[in-house]
Length: 321
Ligand code: TXA
Ligand code: MG
Image (cartoon, rainbow, N blue to C red; front, side, top):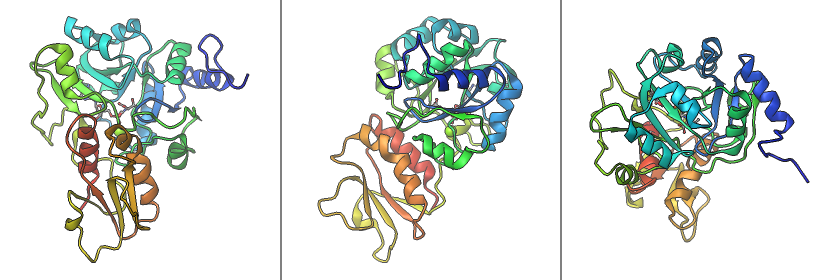
């Protein structure tokens, strides 16, 4: 048998990563959404290293990752409705903002009285959290403001020399960050669109949520909601119909699905228009084009539906022209 990833016998690299985490180290971990930059959430100086490595402002709180409900309940207060949502969507790409318990240090939640919690489904990271027996604080493993990483290679290129380890769990399945729901207000608020669609949340809750909370740029409830985020360095513009692209445009063009006769400067997010596939490919394609697209990038807008809403949201934030 080759490398085994079963939980009873963690592979050596996982034990080493757990050891780094327990000694205050930081490292990249795979999740089903994007790669995270992990530290022991209960160790403020380890958490501080995450902010430093990313160049992230301390006012921008982190998500705490847990591997079971006992760990989740030690970090936050669960209302019966929050519990119902957690039971339905965890493990998975869904983050709940709840009232914080004292166990979670101030630095993790930027001094707010809430904490963002999620139980990821990637087996490697769940095994890591199990092996450490502590919750793990992890933002996306990219320099602040840049596109989130969906491959271990993306992390290595940008943060490789600032962190203690990288666990390679292959390409991230979803490819966009988790859906964030603020569950401490009435109605509950969607803070970030993601793989779990608002309609699914409403179905489980049995009542509506606020899908378009007023964006307050001065006091963003999730600083990830700041308009400029996830940006490539190349100039990125969006279009609905190809006719909107200026004739003189000499850069790269991204379509939602494969064109019938693609030209050299044409790319696509999916073979046939599948939205989950678009999300899965989005960040990796933007990153690879960003390495050479001197004349800019034009990308087609997806429909604001299901996970397409998350793709549209990331593109709108990435748009820098
Ligand atoms: O899929 C994901 O959520 C990935 C993987 C690694 O789990 N993580 C991720 O983390 O995207 P990050 O830090 O890049 O984005 C977390 C977002 C930020 O916009 C932050 O402002 C928001 O969550 N957030 C964290 N704690 C919060 C809180 N207490 N209240 C409101 N927003 C919060
Ligand atoms: Mg991020």
